[in-house]
Length: 164
Image 1 (cartoon, rainbow, N blue to C red):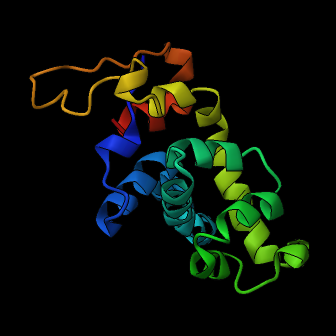
Image 2: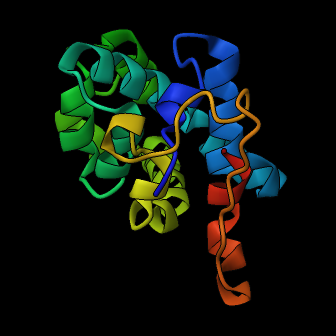
Image 3: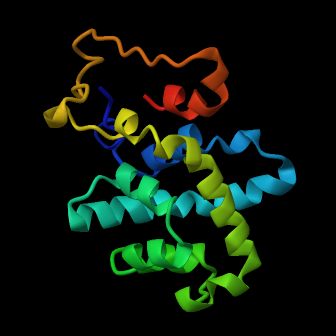
């Protein structure tokens, strides 16, 4: 059983996108020099939201899939739905030339490394209530969600625990 972060966060709102980003990417853990690369990938949340809206896909599942793809292929999915966001993410670099943009590639590496532990647990983060996930109104109904992982997995499970 899991939750659907897409139902718990209103990703059409900038502050909710930022909160989701802070929970899942955890940029505060970066060094001052490394934080800029993580922060550069914030636009992926909006790109996933817009792409999900237009393609009827869960944006959290899109992010998980993109984290396992080459950046050119992932951003090619997003570009028709969020061209302005993709342009900012890539500094205007054409998708065919992304390998020449070292700044972008460093940011993409931050994204994929942050999402690596999340990808295998995507059902914890993106299961709609209709598919057996926790109902979006669980808190209003006085419910409690227990997310349990062994002590050895706490470093990887941190974003999973912080987000719901």
